[in-house]
Every structure is written in C-alpha cells, then in structure tokens.
Image (tube, rainbow, N blue to C red; front, side, top):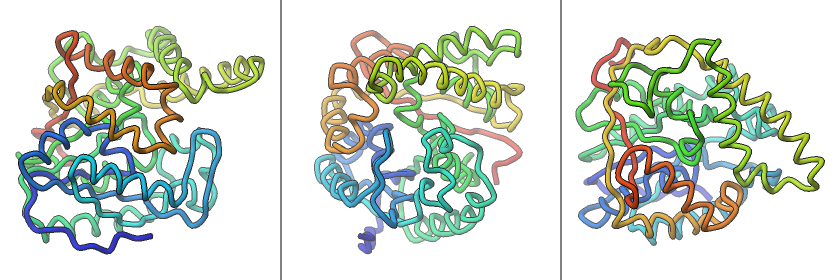
Amino acid sequence: MPDSRKPNNGYKAVFISPHLDDAVFSCGGTIAQLSATGAVLVINVFTYYPREFRKRAITAGPERHAEEHSAAQFLGYESLNLEETDAIFRKSIRGSPSRLFRPPSQIDTACLATIRGRIDEILAGLAYETLYVPMGIGWHVDHVLCHLATRHHLGQPSVFMYEDAPYCLVANATRYRVHELGRTAQNPALSPPPSRRGLLRDWLTTSRSYLGTAPVARIRPSPLRFAAHMVISWYIWSLLAQHLSDPGYNGLSLRDLTNDISGDFDRKLAASYLYASQIGEFFMDRRDCLARYTAYSETMGKPGYHYERFWKAESGPDIR
C-alpha cells in the first residue's frame, strides 16, 4: 500500500533509494549513525508492484513493504514511498534479470521528468542537512534513473552520492562507474578502465567475482549452472565493453569520502536481513554476506574495519 504519511520538516539526512532495500544495503551503517543523533528520511522511488512477481533473483510483493517497515523501525528512520512502477512491470519489457541492466529505454525515460519533479517537490518542503543519492553502480535501470533524476543537485556542499550495494561488491563495478561519471584522484583500486585491449583482465576478474555470488551459485543442476556461467560471462563482457569509455566523459570532478561504520556494521547487517525476500538472492548465507562486505571495505581502509564510501561531485558541465 502507498505510504501517505507526510514527512517531518527537519532531518539530519535524506536518502533517495531506488527500491525498498537499496538505502539499507548501501548505507545502513551511516543511517544507523545519523539516526542516533537526529531524524533520517528514506525516500523509496520504485515501490509499486501491480501484481506479485517471483522469478529467480526478482521478488516483488506486499512483503517487501512490510520488510521496509521493519528495517525503518529497527534503524530508526522514516520511510516514504513514491509508488513509481518498478522496472520489471514497465510494459513487461524487463521481466528478465539481464534486461534490468540495459540502458534506459524511451519507456523508462518517459517517467524521468515525473520522478525528478516529485523528488524536488518533497525536498523543497523539507529542512535537511545532507542529501544522499545513488551513483548508479551496476547500471540497474532504476538506479540509473534515480541518479539522473537527482543529478542536478550534485555540486551542492550537502549532497553526496553513495555506492549502490550489492553491485559495488562486485569487482570493477565501482571503478567503471566512477570513470564513466568523471575524474577522480587515482589510486590502485580506482585506476581508469583500460583500453579495449586491456579489457580481458577486467572481464576475467569481474566474471570470477560475480559467478561466485548467490544468484549464480544457487542454479541447479550443475550442467545448467555451467551453461549459465557461459551466458553470464558473455553478458559481463558486453556490459563492461558497453561502459568502457574515456575517463571523465561526463565531466564531473569527483572526490571520495569513506565513513567508518565498524561500530554500526552489525546493525547494518541485522537490518539487511530484515529484507528476507531479498537478502537470500544476493548472499548464500550470513558468512558469505559478511565476507563480501568485509572484502569491499578492505579495498579502502584498515583490515578489520568496515566502511561505506560516498562521492562528492565538485564541478562539471551537467551540474546545475
């Protein structure tokens, strides 16, 4: 059911979340920290499911709204749902998981102005200290649309982009998206993508990283899983090649900021597992979930600590 509650008028932070789990999976530790000192609002955009849908890694149904309510209560944030139609129901063209990661179509972009207007109308009526918007890592079409709908806010001192989980946990996903959006101070983990002749190494690393995830590992029987490996590996190659571009073609000057969430990581993990219909589609079990978030954190800080990374867009031609 739509959430018709009006939000309060004063917030430590507002998070724009494409779906009913993305903010917690991506920023749950930061949300826990901020909620301890003030009000936090999560605006979920694509939350309308005209019917129940269950297909492999995709689950859409009323239980997802109940899960969001539980997570909001657990972490202490307010939740507002815009009830825009989830991608899998838009003219039935994205019912396959692979189609969700294609660039926005005309059908997708037709709703972009409406989404931008609704988000801006809500934000204009709020007092808030910081705004967090998705970066679009992984290229899920709904995440990309939310990024585009909020892009004009980038460049403001109080606006941050967050790394979309679980996609940012896959090798090279953040790196390719960062350099698709703009330029950043280089480090070994975020060096610019290679030329096409160097794409093979990244493809092997990314394929190995993704093929070990729950959606693939759960495929049975083993001959079917082997066949899926071939198809998915080819798809990853095409996805990386499609987004291989000259660094900074979008012209943003980007700066990364890491937030130590070690003290709140257990709460983030517990909140993530309240999304029972989703978490099992991304992680084999709690050990796998912990290992993947830990490996991700170790790329940006000390071993044994957990981090969430955010990005500031400091300049660029698309910032208005």
